[in-house]
Length: 392
Image (cartoon, rainbow, N blue to C red; front, side):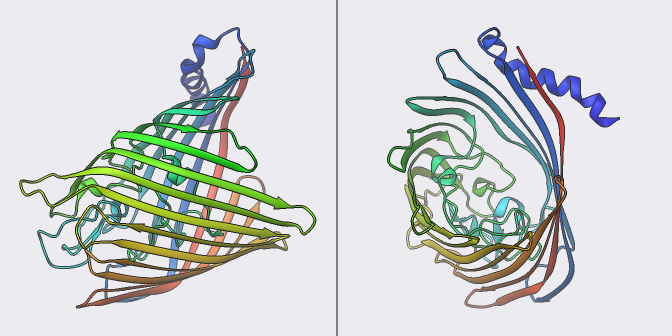
C-alpha cells in the first residue's frame, strides 16, 4: 500500500530535474528505501558514556539518468536520511573533559569540553547533486562528498554503520577513528574528476561554505565551547588501481590533501587555516583483501594535530563476509588516545536482507580518565526498491 502511494510522487520527483533532456534519450529513474538497525544485546562498559542498546537509520535514495546522443551521461542524485545515533556523539562530535570553553577540532570534531546530550531523532538531506559524465571526465554540482572522501581506499568491513573507521552509528559512544578524508560533509560543492588513464584518476573539489549540519559530519555545531567555521575548502585527490592478471593480485591506492580557511564563531580568534593529508590502500587476491589507511590533520588549531590509522583483513567464504580490523587515533588538542578493534561476519539473506554480527572493543584515554566498552553488536539491513522506471 505504501509503495503504491509513493510511486507516483517519487517518479515525478526523480524525473523533474531531467525534464529538459526530453527527447534526447530514455530516462531511467530509481527510488530505494533502506533501514539499518544496530542492536547491542551485550555490552560491558567501564566508565565513559552510557552504551546505546538500539540505534537506527532510515534512508531514501533516488537517482535519474539519461544519455545524450553524443554519449554524455546526465545524472541527478539525492539522499534523505533519518537517524537515531548515540546521544553524546551526534554527527561524530564529542566532548571528553570538563573544560567548558575547550575548542573543537575543525576536522576531528573532538574537544576537552563536557559531554553533550542530544537524543533527538535527526533527519537531513545528505545528498542532492547533478552530475555530468563524458570523455573529459566527471563534473558534480550540489550537496555531495568531496573527492578526498570519494577516492578513499582502506580496509573492507563486514559492517556498514557500526564499523571501526568513520562510524555512522556508534553504540559505545567512544569511536574516534576517522581516516576517511571527509572534510566538508554534505555541504554544497563543485567537484571534477578526470577520466581514468593508465589506472590513475585525479580529482578536485571546492566548497565555499563547509559548515553543513550533517548526520555524520558537523564540527561547526561545537560541544558547548568554541567551534570552527570552515570556508573555501579545496580538496585534491588521486586514485590508482592496478590488476596483475598473471598473479591475480589487485592493488588500489588513494591519496588526498585538503586546505580550508577556518575562523572562530566567537570573539577570540584561535583557529587558523587547516591542512589535512590522507593515504590508503587495498590489496586483493582471490577471496582475501588487506587494507590500510592513514590520516593527519592540524585541526585548524596550534599544537592540536589529529592523526589516525587503520588496518584490516577481509575474506569471503561460505557465502559469508568475514572481517578483522584494528585502528588507533590521537587528538593532541582534546588530549585523547584511542585504540579500537572489530571482529565481524555478515551474510545476505535474499536480495533485500543482510545481517552482521560483530564483537567490538573501544578504548579511549585522556590524562585524567580512561573509558572502555566491549561487547556484541548485531547490524540488520533491510532494503527495498520502491520504484524503477524507464521512459522518454
